[in-house]
Image (cartoon, rainbow, N blue to C red; front, side, top):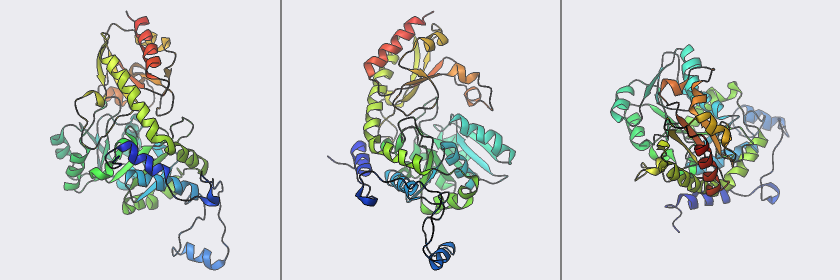
Length: 389
């Protein structure tokens, strides 16, 4: 088997062989400490002068957290990585490292709603203008990029699941000297490595597939030493969104099974998407894997996608009749989840990207978990029939 050609084999090899651990432990020990002491004045002095790099305080450097960061960097092909206490901590710290008052941020439409709210509230109050473009329209992107400080992407995008030509967009940004950052949570490092496509920085909500068990909230950014170093020196020490050692240990555990889980999520979600696409009460299914080909650089698909009901389905009844699919936000764990866009439309907090970008209230987002495709389809199919008007 050619590991370079097979994304599952490639990722499996990386997460299975990540070096020796202390005490020859199969699982790396947790350095659950806030403070590291020095054996001598000389070593302490050399460390604080910057002549020696070693842990001093866990908010700055911790061995367990560093182990996780190095694994992510290898999976994404980055030189360095930095872990955070949440995906939003990773997004906010990264974006705020590259924009200043008066700058312009270019962002693809349909990004993660809380990223959108960050741009439309905090950054706007700081004098940062955000321009939203359809990432599929490269001419529109090219018109928006000149003079921008940062180009922020997702692919596929939230809710609409637009799978973009990331390499072409990265080339456009580089032509105009614009730094690029992409949220790669949907595909994970198994099915997409944006750094290899020319993107500068890759972000993950590690709460999703990287953690994989719905028991940790975390984020991470990876890229070149210079760009990650800029985040490390400008926002990371002061915003305080530090990844804890125990959460890093949980993420290391999640990475061990990431390739196998992504393969299972992909297969089950495609099975459900195809069944929905053939259902007379479903108007459209938004899943990148249903097309003839995936865009360059995307080698597989995950368990998250959306579909739109016809007017002949009562969505609240459909939601209440589900048993295996639970009503809940987030995704990436073992459990299957459903979020009706009707609820998102009624959300009270902050700017509403679903409304601003025209997400239909007839849309439903699914995360297909690991309960088994046939059982999940029986649950969905029964709920749809029960909700037929």
